[in-house]
Length: 301
Image (cartoon, rainbow, N blue to C red; front, top):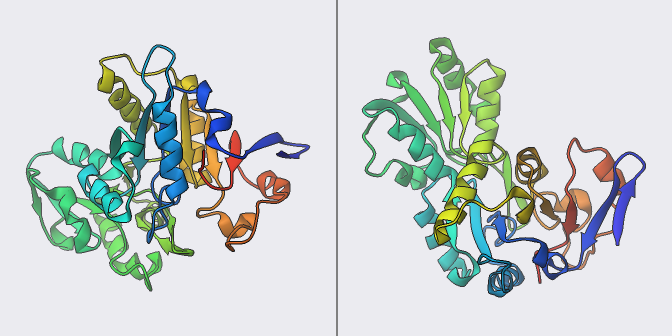
């Protein structure tokens, strides 16, 4: 099955990862929206990655690196995945926006940093040579999210953003996502605050998808697992549920990509209800600024 429009041509609709698995040596897989929905794991997704890793490779092992825009170090994401029941056999390594943020902060030892975000994200600063300060004393702001993502919006932060802009304080966005899906609801993320700051003229550095450094780092990690060079981009499949980050970033880096429909775009694609199936979404694709190489309802084998 395919969906198509006169402008874009066909977009294959896969029944399972097994349809294309042998074309790839490596998968870069999104986490939230693909492996879990913020409440529970998607068992079929983990099974698909386990099956991929078990297939004989063409001269190198097949590897899976989870690439997450989570604003915490990879060990914190692994703990969450363990709690949801995602088996460690489904992946070889994890790279997070939190890891990239920590690398950026390590470049300026002793800097005065203000943390804009909930206390649960404070592990991002663990054992770094920085000074955590209040908003008025900040040399740099690290935004990990909204304090209360159940009721706040980026507009609630406008006064402090305007104050930082007046002082030309740079911001590191430790989660470029605008929203994530949590049990069927869309929850705002740090990317919304960073977007609002950039709209005011503020300087923002984004740590994570869709920006090139995260893909370069992920491929380097994959090569390092086996003491090999990074795999060729055409042999790397990027899987995610967000056009703006997962798909746009993969396309810009030259990676084949697969969109999971049951994620943040589920409502737009008509699969937000459990019994719904993916139908003709050509008109939706035609209205987007980027499209995937293929689409799948859920990540399954």
